[in-house]
Length: 204
Image 1 (cartoon, rainbow, N blue to C red):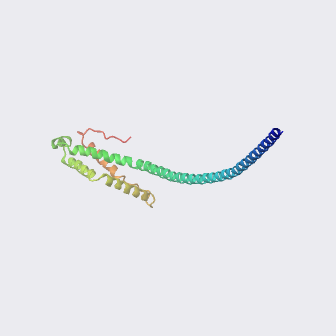
Image 2: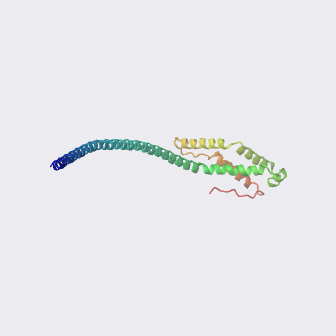
Image 3: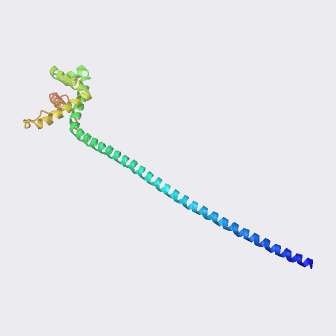
């Protein structure tokens, strides 16, 4: 009888222990779920803050890049405009000066070659002393002008020609460029000296 009673008491105690364990497990699960729910709420707000910060960063970066490329484009446009204007000015100046500069260079070359010939050969090519003196004078004249001096002289002639076109006496023609006149003087001297058989090159 006593042994049976003990078994029943033990069985009841075992059932109570199981109920307590089950209750404790359920409570723990609820606490875990509550903790997870709180973490999810915090995670949600953290994600929202991160997205907002990221959006602001993108906006700031976009504005910075916009300003940067706007400045670069403006600067490149100015540089391109200056280069185009400089190129156009160079093209115009080249067309205006090439004939005069070429003629001046030809005269310098021919008179320099004649000036360095032996005296006997000069007399054979140009017998009259007067003509030899003219050759020497032309040589000294063209070589007295340095390249910057010739450029300045040409610039002054361009300005004088433009002023003449706008003056009351615009119908009067200019006598031509001094640099180009050097070539005319050389051609005249060569034509008076049959022994000098050369053909002055023409600019192409």
